[in-house]
Amino acid sequence: MLVWILFLLCQVGAPALAQDLCQRDAPNGYKVRISLKTALGEDAYEWNQSEMFFFRATMAFAMRKHFQMETYNVDNIILCVQTSRVSFWFVVTSPDNATILIPKADVEKAVRMSRHRINNAFLLSDRTLEFLGIHPTLAAPVIPDTPPWLIVFGVVIGAVCAGIITLLVSSLLQKRRKEKGMTEDGQDEEDMQVKGVENGINLDGTYNRGFTDDDRFTKL
Image 1 (cartoon, one colour):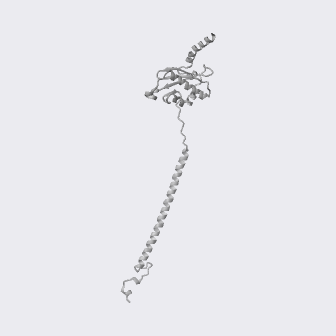
Image 2 (tube, rainbow, N blue to C red):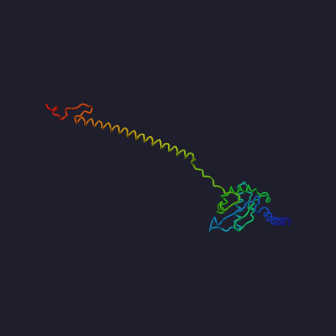
C-alpha cells in the first residue's frame, strides 16, 4: 500500500517538477524553432506528439554521444512552452538526479557534435531547425589532395621552363637563319665568279683577252 502511494505521488509530482525545471528563458534551456513548410513545402509532415518524442530521442542520443554515457534517455529531455507554429523550449536533466539540469554549455556541445544527425532525422537543415543561441555548424573545410602552394609552385616552374625552352628555340632558329644566309651569300659570290670567267671577265681584276670581240686582239 505504501509503495502504491509513493508511486502515485511520483506520478503526480513529476509533471510539476518538470514544469518548474523547464520554463521560458530558462538559464539552462534552449528554444527550438522548426520551419517545416519552408523546408519541405507541400511534402511537409505534421508535427505531433510522435515527432516530439522523436526529438527527445535524438537529443538523448546526442547527449549519450557527447558524454560517452548510455544512461541518458528520453525522460531526461523535458519540453515545454510548445506553440502551434512549431517552437518549444527544452532542458536536459542529469541521469543521476532528475532535479539537476545539465549546464547549457554542455547541451550546446552535444547539439553541435550531432547537429548533422539531428537535421537529417527530421529532413531539415540549420536554417529550418534552429536552436536559438547555437550558431549553425559550419561545414568542414575541403582539404585538397595537393597543397595550394605546391600548385602555385608548379605553375611558376612550368612558366619558367616554357620561357627557357622558347628562348633556346628562338636562339637556335636565329643561328640557323644566319648560317643559311652566309651559305647563300657564298654561293652567290661563287656563281658570280663562274659567270665572270665565262664572259671573259676575271673578278680578281685581270682581263681575259681570249674572250674579247675587239679585232685588235683577235687578228692574227
